[in-house]
Image (cartoon, rainbow, N blue to C red; front, side, top):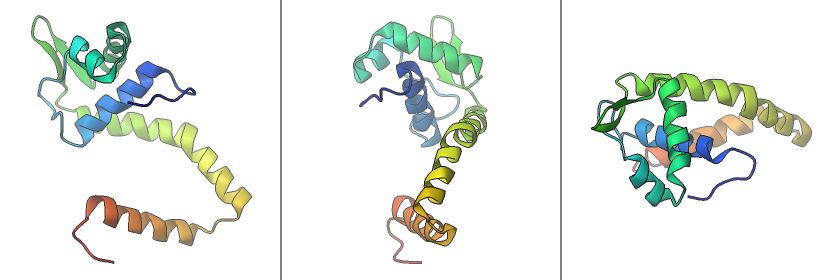
Length: 129
Protein backbone atom coordinates (compact mmCIF):
# COMPACT_ATOMS: atom_id res chain seq x y z
CA UNK A 1 0.00 0.00 0.00
CA UNK A 2 1.34 3.43 -0.93
CA UNK A 3 0.75 5.88 1.89
CA UNK A 4 0.20 9.61 1.41
CA UNK A 5 1.97 12.23 3.50
CA UNK A 6 -1.10 14.43 4.03
CA UNK A 7 -3.22 11.91 5.92
CA UNK A 8 -2.50 9.84 9.04
CA UNK A 9 -1.53 6.26 8.18
CA UNK A 10 -4.14 4.76 10.51
CA UNK A 11 -6.85 6.70 8.64
CA UNK A 12 -5.51 5.50 5.30
CA UNK A 13 -5.66 1.94 6.61
CA UNK A 14 -9.22 2.62 7.81
CA UNK A 15 -10.09 3.68 4.25
CA UNK A 16 -8.52 0.45 2.99
CA UNK A 17 -10.57 -1.67 5.42
CA UNK A 18 -13.74 0.23 4.54
CA UNK A 19 -13.13 -0.27 0.83
CA UNK A 20 -12.66 -4.01 1.34
CA UNK A 21 -16.01 -4.12 3.16
CA UNK A 22 -17.79 -1.97 0.55
CA UNK A 23 -16.44 -4.14 -2.29
CA UNK A 24 -17.73 -7.28 -0.55
CA UNK A 25 -14.26 -8.73 -0.06
CA UNK A 26 -14.78 -8.61 3.72
CA UNK A 27 -18.59 -9.02 4.05
CA UNK A 28 -20.57 -7.77 7.05
CA UNK A 29 -20.72 -10.38 9.78
CA UNK A 30 -17.52 -12.03 8.56
CA UNK A 31 -14.15 -12.08 10.27
CA UNK A 32 -11.58 -9.58 9.00
CA UNK A 33 -7.78 -10.01 9.16
CA UNK A 34 -6.17 -9.96 12.58
CA UNK A 35 -4.11 -6.98 13.69
CA UNK A 36 -0.94 -8.94 13.07
CA UNK A 37 -2.02 -10.28 9.65
CA UNK A 38 -3.08 -6.87 8.37
CA UNK A 39 0.10 -5.31 9.71
CA UNK A 40 2.19 -7.86 7.82
CA UNK A 41 0.09 -7.46 4.65
CA UNK A 42 0.39 -3.66 4.66
CA UNK A 43 3.93 -3.63 6.07
CA UNK A 44 3.03 -1.43 9.04
CA UNK A 45 3.53 -1.69 12.77
CA UNK A 46 0.73 -3.72 14.42
CA UNK A 47 0.17 -0.77 16.80
CA UNK A 48 -0.92 1.29 13.79
CA UNK A 49 -3.47 -1.39 12.89
CA UNK A 50 -4.67 -1.43 16.52
CA UNK A 51 -5.26 2.32 16.24
CA UNK A 52 -7.16 1.78 12.98
CA UNK A 53 -9.32 -0.95 14.47
CA UNK A 54 -10.03 1.18 17.56
CA UNK A 55 -11.11 4.04 15.28
CA UNK A 56 -13.38 1.75 13.23
CA UNK A 57 -14.87 0.26 16.42
CA UNK A 58 -15.73 3.77 17.61
CA UNK A 59 -17.57 4.27 14.29
CA UNK A 60 -19.37 0.90 14.83
CA UNK A 61 -17.99 -0.37 11.52
CA UNK A 62 -16.18 -3.34 13.06
CA UNK A 63 -16.39 -5.11 16.40
CA UNK A 64 -14.18 -7.43 18.41
CA UNK A 65 -15.24 -10.85 19.66
CA UNK A 66 -12.83 -11.40 22.51
CA UNK A 67 -10.51 -14.30 21.78
CA UNK A 68 -11.89 -14.80 18.26
CA UNK A 69 -11.00 -11.64 16.34
CA UNK A 70 -12.47 -8.65 14.55
CA UNK A 71 -15.59 -8.73 12.42
CA UNK A 72 -17.30 -6.34 10.03
CA UNK A 73 -20.50 -5.13 11.69
CA UNK A 74 -23.83 -6.12 10.16
CA UNK A 75 -24.55 -2.44 9.42
CA UNK A 76 -20.96 -1.74 8.31
CA UNK A 77 -21.79 -0.78 4.72
CA UNK A 78 -24.31 1.91 5.69
CA UNK A 79 -22.07 3.23 8.48
CA UNK A 80 -19.11 3.42 6.10
CA UNK A 81 -21.17 5.30 3.55
CA UNK A 82 -22.35 7.81 6.16
CA UNK A 83 -18.80 8.33 7.45
CA UNK A 84 -17.17 8.58 4.02
CA UNK A 85 -19.88 10.88 2.64
CA UNK A 86 -19.28 13.21 5.57
CA UNK A 87 -15.51 13.23 4.97
CA UNK A 88 -15.99 13.72 1.22
CA UNK A 89 -18.46 16.58 1.61
CA UNK A 90 -16.34 18.37 4.22
CA UNK A 91 -12.85 17.90 2.81
CA UNK A 92 -12.72 16.72 -0.79
CA UNK A 93 -15.73 18.40 -2.39
CA UNK A 94 -14.70 22.00 -1.57
CA UNK A 95 -11.32 21.41 -3.24
CA UNK A 96 -13.05 19.81 -6.23
CA UNK A 97 -15.37 22.82 -6.59
CA UNK A 98 -12.41 25.17 -6.33
CA UNK A 99 -10.63 23.34 -9.14
CA UNK A 100 -13.76 23.40 -11.32
CA UNK A 101 -14.05 27.14 -10.82
CA UNK A 102 -10.36 27.95 -11.34
CA UNK A 103 -10.08 25.77 -14.44
CA UNK A 104 -13.45 26.86 -15.85
CA UNK A 105 -14.70 23.29 -16.16
CA UNK A 106 -18.38 22.87 -17.03
CA UNK A 107 -20.48 20.50 -14.92
CA UNK A 108 -21.77 18.84 -18.12
CA UNK A 109 -18.20 17.73 -18.89
CA UNK A 110 -17.93 16.29 -15.39
CA UNK A 111 -21.27 14.49 -15.75
CA UNK A 112 -20.20 12.87 -19.04
CA UNK A 113 -16.87 11.74 -17.59
CA UNK A 114 -18.63 10.41 -14.50
CA UNK A 115 -20.99 8.31 -16.62
CA UNK A 116 -18.03 6.96 -18.62
CA UNK A 117 -16.18 6.16 -15.40
CA UNK A 118 -19.14 4.24 -13.97
CA UNK A 119 -19.60 2.28 -17.19
CA UNK A 120 -15.92 1.43 -17.41
CA UNK A 121 -15.32 0.62 -13.73
CA UNK A 122 -18.57 -1.08 -12.76
CA UNK A 123 -20.00 -2.30 -16.07
CA UNK A 124 -16.86 -3.40 -17.96
CA UNK A 125 -18.83 -5.65 -20.37
CA UNK A 126 -21.23 -2.86 -21.32
CA UNK A 127 -20.24 -1.01 -24.50
CA UNK A 128 -20.93 2.74 -24.62
CA UNK A 129 -24.01 4.33 -23.12
